[in-house]
Length: 210
Image (cartoon, helix red, strand yellow):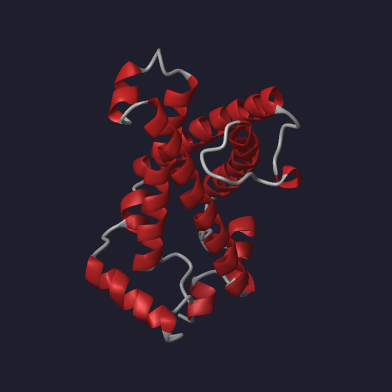
């Protein structure tokens, strides 16, 4: 069978094929994207109130208007991220999609796929299959989000979560962990968006599913 028809890219047969990205995945993906944007922009405003380093974020790219407003936006986005993220992980695990899409990951596979990407030979023909670099990146950002939330809990309720505070190395270390996990997340989003623009079909699949 022709690959375009089999993957649902054209023709009436393709329209009846299973979606590349099911509806639950698309909804959780875009809700996660919204939560991340709100958390990062409000987080930058909170950072400006007590900077860790000798720079500040421009007010135009922050959210909240003032510290209390930014904190309210940040907490609202945090709950959206946590609840939606748990649904995403739960359904991914229950349906077996997590193991099919994200594993296995091997150092050799990552090196080979990265080398193929640098030489323009990395195939994007099958959107149902993640290459090794994608698998590693998605697993890394999931771990990053866990650290982001845990360090955020330490900053929010340091006294109520003494064990988490100690695991983070103390309140001040948790601030650095929170900042650098946020930085990694922003870098991931920038690269993710850039790759979607380079392969626009993947963006259309995440919008329409097919």
